[in-house]
Length: 504
Ligand code: ADP
Image (cartoon, rainbow, N blue to C red; front, side):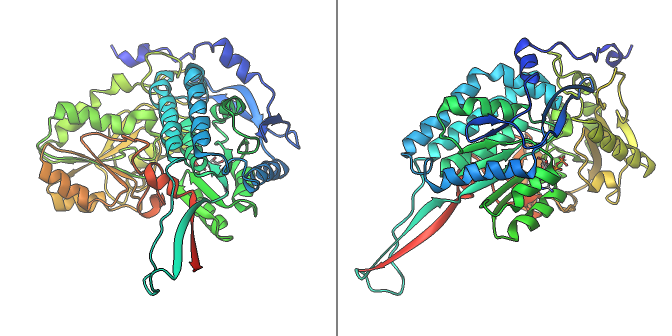
């Protein structure tokens, strides 16, 4: 009867290339070489589709971090990267993108094994996304320039003044586990375009694709020390990176809680900081919509990547005249989103990334039920032999005081609320400490623009959700972050401005 009970949640066999990669000795990539850690500590690599340990990576020591930062410092200070012709920087970055493209299938498989996301999704979204970050930013390497400006208070011809854009320096880049390679690429691409050198640390749960990327750095032609990739825990290796005196800039994507801590630690020594943090993004469905289009759209906004998306549409606001139909339409997508192992070609949603995340998400669902929310769909765990699966979940009868409404769950859980008019929904949508993304579904162009203007968030989507493009700035209002990534503004975040004033 129930289609979901017939799904096998047995993870499939890995390809020989993936198995060989997982069997490698845990090492760090510093100064264009694979090197041993100064100590023996490792982190287990777990496949969240089965819950099995499938490999190990280094848990970097303070000494390892210092070694990576020293490599990046030396490479920055002697100008071996920033001093190259922009054309060469552009070509080198494009060669890295070419190599990623040539190895795309293996990257997609490693991402699926490590994170739990469907391999088909990694192949369609994560890997092409990472490639386009590199290619777009490669073009910026040759388009960075200053200005000559006539001073306001000085007579013409007596002073020559101009500005120069210079790379910020050594960057510590710390990324989360939800889109591992895409986030890594989103960080390294603008830094490289600007002429910076870097130390990148992937999340301890998902280090595989960053390590595989390191395999390609030498072949692409990067000078030693420009890209250093280390693995390790956040509170140790990550903390050391953020506080390191030889680091000039910190770029972080992750939770708001850790982002605030990193901001304090980094700005204590005036490091430049970019933060892309959490969200609780609203999805507003107006009464004029075609429900057959908007309901699957609202479902995709929350269930894509198991809801482990900083811009996940986790608060649904549907107009009271379409509320019931929208929820019915979303519930009808349950078979499509039913979680499967990441290497199952029919998977649209995988497990959550870890046991910890599973417990956290189920804890929120239980809290919602205790607080009086009603479960419209899901709210439970499907049958499986291990693995961290959660069924896609819709909660209704919620109120703004509940933790499921206020806090970022980072799982496939949406809370649904009714509204009556534009003023009310604008107020409800903004009733959050976050401001990362928002979705609006309507055919009425005037309503679209009015609401887009009123919602306080870094990105507003109309009749779609979570569409990201490397040419378009991305970042948060309020507690969702600091600064912007991608687009022209993304490179700006890796540049200083020097003003030169010469009396003639
Ligand atoms: P999540 O809650 O999604 O696991 P976190 O914000 O904890 O995300 O982690 C995102 C990234 O930040 C990871 O790479 C993690 O190792 C790193 N990290 C966590 N704590 C710290 C810290 N105190 N200093 C620096 N990096 C950290």
